Image (tube, rainbow, N blue to C red):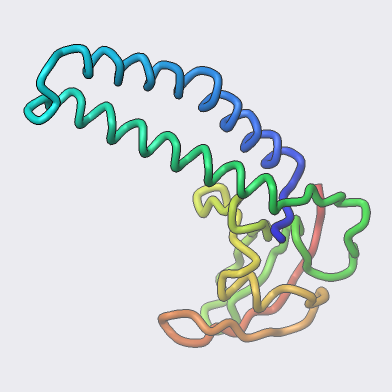
Length: 155
């Protein structure tokens, strides 16, 4: 079971609807057109159309499974005094005194450029359940980070 924000759930549903209603019909038309060109064994257009069809079907199935096994999380039900899903966390790396701000999200919402990290990442997992002022350790590929939680906010 994965938990998603309402915004991300809607984005995935919209992508799925677009793939089913717009992209896949166009892929089918392209495949029929390539098939009509004759000898399929030497038809590069046909092979490319089949590749795109398989990729589109794969993406549709993946998104269907994501939505089937996901639930929209209600941020009002989350604890406000500790780090949890959809928390915006400001913390300090105690070895470098570098401060960072991140948002804890599900793996399907992760976007490092936007400051969104997965709750399953080493840092996300280390922060989960902690309160302001607590120090935790995150085991990352480069070693162990000691992190102090400075603030927790929600949208």
